[in-house]
Amino acid sequence: MTEITEEKEIWSGTPSQIVNLSTFIICGLFFWLIIPLFIILWQWLVVKNTQYELTTHRLKIRQGVINKKMDDLELYRVRDYSLEQPLLLRWFGLENIILQTSDRTDPVVIIRAVKNGEELQGKIREAVEACRAKTQGVREVDVEQ
Image (tube, rainbow, N blue to C red; front, side):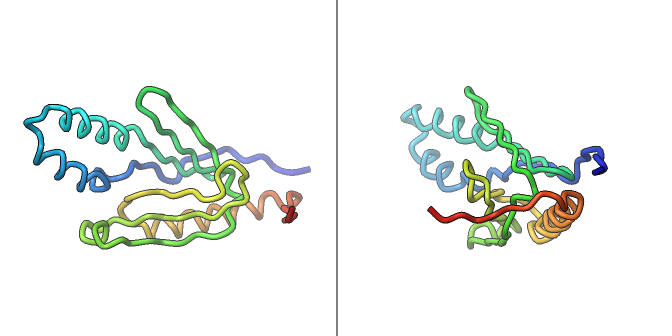
């Protein structure tokens, strides 16, 4: 009989508004047209309403301003993880974490513009390995079509 453990939060966060820097600069130059101010506000809201939560069982991604979308990625589905540091993000000490998964709806999951990405990637790896150890009866089979 398998033991069901309580799900606990390991980490939660949101992307940095730095991802909008180019939009903010370009729209800021044309602020007198009024419409760019709405674009700035919308882009700010999109990032502000994106939330990541890593638990002992899954990665929860909540996003959306008007229409909300909630995705849960079971950690045992994570196949590979990589860290990406584009120049702009590196200047601000931010990183993207890219997860390759076996999930059909989201084969690639990107945790965008977070601080301490290397540390977070380590936490994800530990949680994935712990989750796989707990669910030893669950196996994935790759079938090419």
